[in-house]
Length: 108
Image (tube, rainbow, N blue to C red):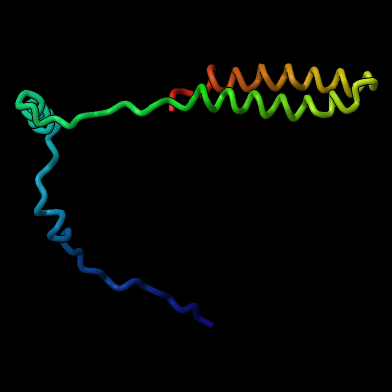
């Protein structure tokens, strides 16, 4: 038996679409010049600074997280194992959230 040989049909290379040919290349110097002219003629856009929510989010996370660990501490106060576990959890949670919010994350 002979193995059948397959060949690809020759394709005609087509030019790029007309949309790609109509556009001029982007010139960064020209964009910078237009932005500078707009700034000199006071046509610039007014940018208002948004209020930062980072401090509020940090305080909410600290209060809710530590409250979640404080409830079993108060319910099972005579039990030394649960008391020490809750206190250490509160310390680890507080240090971890502080490090993530102020050390790792940027302003948002």
